[in-house]
Length: 103
Image (cartoon, rainbow, N blue to C red; front, side):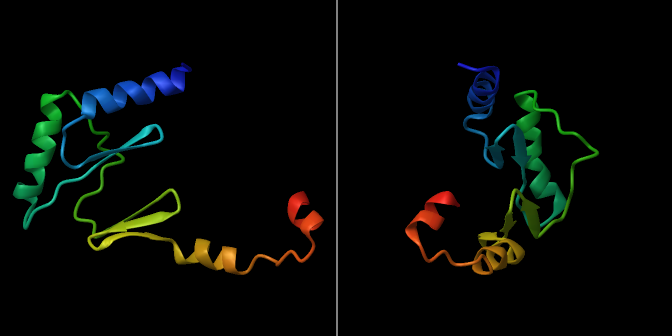
C-alpha cells in the first residue's frame, strides 16, 4: 500500500461514523446543517471529539453552495459546473475510429 493509500485509509477509519464529514481525495469536507449557526456547530463539536482539526483559513460558514473538484454541492444535491459540462459539449466530434483511439 502506498503512503497516499495508507493516509486515505486512516482518514476513513478515524472519521467513520461522523455525520457531516466527507473524505475527498486527500481533503476533508466537513459541514454542519441546521436552522442556525448553533445547530450547525453541534456537528463540529462531534468532530473535535475525534481530534479533527479544522483549518480556520479554509473554513467557510453559511454557504448554500460549495464548488469543489468540478462539482457544486448545494442544499439540493450535487451537480457539475455548467462550464465543465459546456466544455464537454463543445469538444470536436471524432468521426473515424482510429482518430477516436488516438484521442
